[in-house]
Image (tube, rainbow, N blue to C red; front, side, top):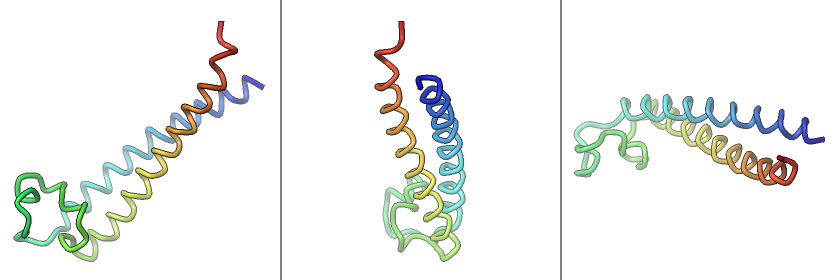
Amino acid sequence: MTTVVAISAACLMVLAIVSMVVGSYFWIRASFNRRRPSRRWFVHTNPLNAVLFEDELLSEGLKYRGKAFRAIGVALISTAALFTASAFLAPFSN
Protein backbone atom coordinates (compact mmCIF):
# COMPACT_ATOMS: atom_id res chain seq x y z
CA MET A 1 0.00 0.00 0.00
CA THR A 2 2.79 2.42 0.84
CA THR A 3 4.43 1.74 -2.52
CA VAL A 4 1.28 2.77 -4.34
CA VAL A 5 1.05 5.96 -2.28
CA ALA A 6 4.74 6.70 -2.88
CA ILE A 7 4.36 6.26 -6.65
CA SER A 8 1.24 8.43 -6.59
CA ALA A 9 3.13 11.09 -4.63
CA ALA A 10 5.92 11.05 -7.20
CA CYS A 11 3.40 11.47 -10.00
CA LEU A 12 1.77 14.35 -8.12
CA MET A 13 5.15 16.02 -7.69
CA VAL A 14 5.86 15.77 -11.40
CA LEU A 15 2.37 17.08 -12.17
CA ALA A 16 2.85 20.03 -9.81
CA ILE A 17 6.21 20.98 -11.34
CA VAL A 18 5.01 20.65 -14.92
CA SER A 19 1.81 22.58 -14.30
CA MET A 20 3.73 25.42 -12.61
CA VAL A 21 6.04 25.65 -15.62
CA VAL A 22 3.08 25.62 -18.01
CA GLY A 23 1.23 28.15 -15.87
CA SER A 24 4.24 30.45 -15.86
CA TYR A 25 4.51 30.16 -19.64
CA PHE A 26 0.86 31.09 -20.15
CA TRP A 27 1.14 33.92 -17.60
CA ILE A 28 4.03 35.44 -19.56
CA ARG A 29 2.21 34.94 -22.86
CA ALA A 30 -0.86 36.69 -21.45
CA SER A 31 1.23 39.64 -20.28
CA PHE A 32 2.57 40.07 -23.82
CA ASN A 33 -1.03 40.52 -25.03
CA ARG A 34 -1.96 43.53 -22.93
CA ARG A 35 -3.43 46.89 -23.77
CA ARG A 36 -1.02 49.75 -24.08
CA PRO A 37 -0.84 52.23 -22.44
CA SER A 38 -1.98 50.89 -19.12
CA ARG A 39 -4.14 52.86 -16.71
CA ARG A 40 -2.47 51.35 -13.64
CA TRP A 41 0.94 52.42 -12.42
CA PHE A 42 1.91 48.95 -11.14
CA VAL A 43 1.36 47.49 -14.60
CA HIS A 44 3.84 50.05 -15.90
CA THR A 45 6.43 48.93 -13.34
CA ASN A 46 5.77 45.20 -13.79
CA PRO A 47 3.93 44.11 -16.97
CA LEU A 48 3.19 40.68 -15.47
CA ASN A 49 0.65 42.41 -13.19
CA ALA A 50 -1.56 43.01 -16.23
CA VAL A 51 -2.74 39.40 -16.02
CA LEU A 52 -4.48 40.14 -12.73
CA PHE A 53 -6.95 42.53 -14.41
CA GLU A 54 -9.25 41.55 -17.27
CA ASP A 55 -9.50 45.08 -18.65
CA GLU A 56 -5.72 45.23 -19.16
CA LEU A 57 -5.65 42.30 -21.62
CA LEU A 58 -6.63 41.85 -25.23
CA SER A 59 -8.83 38.92 -26.27
CA GLU A 60 -5.80 36.71 -26.93
CA GLY A 61 -4.39 37.62 -23.53
CA LEU A 62 -7.65 36.63 -21.86
CA LYS A 63 -7.36 33.15 -23.37
CA TYR A 64 -3.84 32.77 -22.00
CA ARG A 65 -4.98 34.19 -18.64
CA GLY A 66 -7.58 31.44 -18.27
CA LYS A 67 -5.07 28.76 -19.18
CA ALA A 68 -2.55 30.19 -16.71
CA PHE A 69 -5.07 30.24 -13.86
CA ARG A 70 -6.16 26.67 -14.62
CA ALA A 71 -2.56 25.41 -14.70
CA ILE A 72 -1.67 27.17 -11.46
CA GLY A 73 -4.85 25.80 -9.88
CA VAL A 74 -3.85 22.27 -10.89
CA ALA A 75 -0.41 22.89 -9.37
CA LEU A 76 -1.91 24.06 -6.08
CA ILE A 77 -4.32 21.13 -5.87
CA SER A 78 -1.63 18.58 -6.69
CA THR A 79 0.69 20.18 -4.12
CA ALA A 80 -2.04 19.89 -1.48
CA ALA A 81 -2.56 16.23 -2.43
CA LEU A 82 1.21 15.72 -2.24
CA PHE A 83 1.27 17.09 1.31
CA THR A 84 -1.59 14.76 2.21
CA ALA A 85 0.26 11.79 0.76
CA SER A 86 3.44 12.72 2.62
CA ALA A 87 1.46 12.96 5.87
CA PHE A 88 0.14 9.48 5.15
CA LEU A 89 3.62 8.10 4.45
CA ALA A 90 5.32 9.75 7.45
CA PRO A 91 4.38 7.07 10.02
CA PHE A 92 5.79 4.35 7.75
CA SER A 93 9.25 5.87 7.33
CA ASN A 94 12.02 4.54 9.55
